Length: 185
Image (cartoon, rainbow, N blue to C red; front, side, top):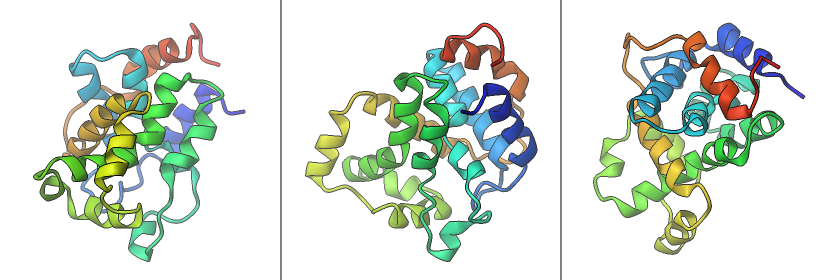
């Protein structure tokens, strides 16, 4: 079982690696995403999900850019088992669904595909491509799917080089609230 302190240490120690083919590091991406959720006035659970949604990239050992090797790192599936010992479904389910939310948005919004970065388009193909209309309908009916769609939109926006955000310590009280603790486990 991992502790919140160990998760924070993962970001501090491995978060400087590049976020796929984007102009930001893993940590910068996470902080930008959480900042967008916080600025939108969302719950501590959704802010925590936004901060931690790509933790799976930090716990695998496939290299920095597995998509360039034609590998789907299934980061959403790698993150949830690590996080579900600390956080409720309101945090872990949007994380589990954020990749599927990209597939959903491509299916239901004509302009969404064009708005994706090159790296995100490449990973989408590895992740199964655009949902069929039936799959899109089934996706959005799941619990926390709407939260996953919001998270996905912030995920897409959180790729701005040298953007100033609050640091990791700023989000500690939010993480503690989301996991129901008052002190770092």
